[in-house]
Length: 262
Image (tube, rainbow, N blue to C red; front, side):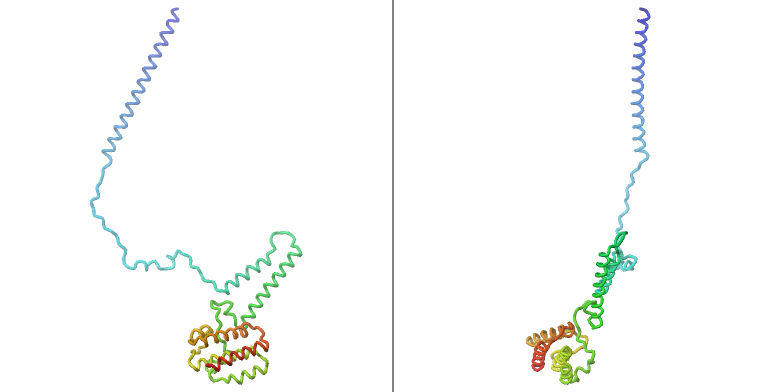
């Protein structure tokens, strides 16, 4: 009985001691927080000072034409796009197709059908190249590769001075006797230009085109005739189409009628 009572008293004392200790810890922690807060406020007020800037603001300005200092190439950040001519496009096209023709794809055996197909494609490409080279030789290179498709009046046989003194009737008779309709139409066209130049309708210049001469003509009727005859000339001379007797007779009558009307 005495032992039980002793145990009860011991437990009660331990409980009271534990509660008292907890209260002491809590009070200590609260005191520490208050102390730290006070120190922080004190440090804020003492260590940090507010400075006022009373100096006047001076605006900055750029000197005149300062952009000229940055016109050098190293300051150009935009890529320069180069204009490609038709000749450049043709070379790129040819390189593309040659690469495709001679590239047989992945590894493995190449079939006979694939070889035949690529051979046909190669022949087509070579034929196209042949036609282009042939056209260049025939003095149509500018029409294909140049930026302008206008055809100049070619005067291989005549200089600028000769066209005003040549006897076109004689050379036309010779070309007709040789049954060269294409060359005859060429001579008729040059004769037409000479007649218009002699009468002040146009101003002859070896560098001018059909369109240039058409713009100089003021008479509407003559303008229409010249436009039609220019079409015949381009069709036969530059187009290299075969001109039979019927077509030549019709063209000759149109040329003679217009030449005599000037």
